[in-house]
Length: 261
Length: 258
Image 1 (cartoon, helix red, strand yellow):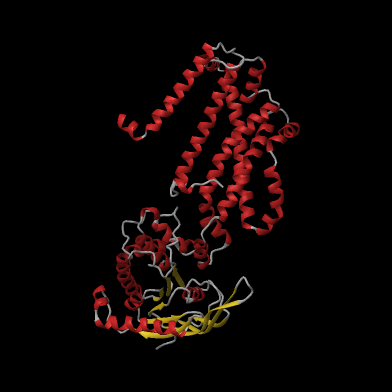
Image 2: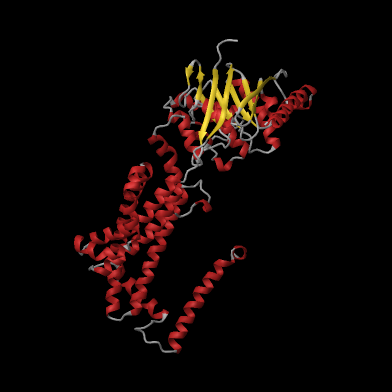
């Protein structure tokens, strides 16, 4: 174990920074008697978190938000890959749609969240749509760039074999784009959680975003922090799962090759 | 000599440049290549030898004259041709074996028969036991061997090779040349091989086509009468030296003329 630490000292240092930060925070709150509605002590957050877990408070809300984020992510991933592929394959489609895509992409998608809640209601479906909207563009952009980033030699090889357009796409272009696609999906999964929370802020009865609003209303700041920790856990877990899938599927790419567009 | 496998007659190629002027890359190329022959094309960078190969492969249209393969005019890529490019151009997500099978898949050939053939070809290029390795697990020379097996898998009578060993170190390159001659003799293919190395051109060829630059023309065709099978010791022989000197002098003369 000591050998491993010597080889990777940043692991120990990261842990130390965490412990030091938490201790410093606790000390500041106690010494300066910071009121709990401004900033709760780490112990208070831990107590709130433990209480929430014991009473199964988080289970339903966590599940709702996770469902919204994942459903939104899947819609964004599927539509981003299909539409991105069509755009990259057909120049006319690209040129026709490009101005609208730029306009849509530069618009802050979160700004239309209230509209989507009006259209799709206060239930989970509006959050799924918001999550999908926010997560869609990173997938789309990476798919288009990935499909266009291909060395001419591979295309010439396929041409020399008189490959059809579909064969070239299926056997060469799409697998070749996968490192980019996964970079986009990795961003998208984090964005979809963001979208779900924003949707819940705008109007919802359930979900971790809704829980944050409830705790905020009653100035239960320790409760807010506890939910934030749950949200971080969700984000980190989803990101790690994405990375594990990515490592399995694009095993051939060096980590450095996987770049985001 | 029977009817040639490839006949090139009065071939011309001009490119339109950005400034709306035209650059002539190839002028009045005429040559015949017989079935089973090993022909090398040697010339300086920019003499149009890669352009010539791409026209032979049907990957580029010509501007004048014509190329026929087995009597039929070449106007596009053909399954009668296998190509080995400067880079191996392997698909990194496929094993060596699956890379060799790519043409079988694209050309929709019988996979059962060709799986066997792919395995035999990998053995022929010296990669037995490496079938399941991925390109990043292979050395540069091994990757180019996979590319050669891939070019042969659909059994084309003609193999076009564009400086295939240019990126390899000198020693690997020499041993690949010996290997290539062995593969050529075992497979009975016709090979057109492009290089800018005079000694490589002489070592491999039945005939060396010497090209001059701007526009690319056939300056001379040198028949190499060295005995086969050839080995690397031959490169130190007097006869070998006579051939390489003669070709080198052609370039010097061409240099002065231009």
